[in-house]
Picture 1 (cartoon, rainbow, N blue to C red):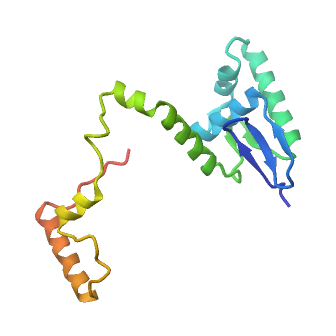
Picture 2 (picture 1 turned 120 degrees about the vertical axis):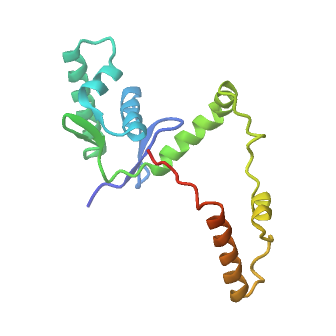
Picture 3 (picture 1 turned 90 degrees about the horizontal axis):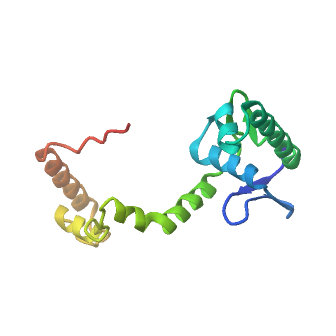
Length: 172
């Protein structure tokens, strides 16, 4: 049975086990796990160079090996799959933690970044009531009958077709 724990990367980076134990992560351990969580797989040599920029290549790789060993011993299992490319173990779920990191970053730096690129959120606000009005929808569609809803859908489909279809989103 796998050991149940959660990685916490915000505030005081740590491992929290389901039995209530916690262990603070050292800065380099937290940095490695955060890089892999936020950026995905990373070549081993690149991770070593980022974590120990002033060390010789061999020393940086040795430091990384020791970190991975200590993390494995601390967690009681591999947190990082360590081949030529490092990646978090596939069963580690950090979706909510990564969301918190991105949210924290947006709260701390979002307004400044938007200002620097000339984006004014007040000019680009999303107004669902306005969108509904432009589509000819009332706020309350729950009182409509099934037939009325089908008629509305047909009208909306016709409007989309007349406008040349839905815009194509380029997913690069």
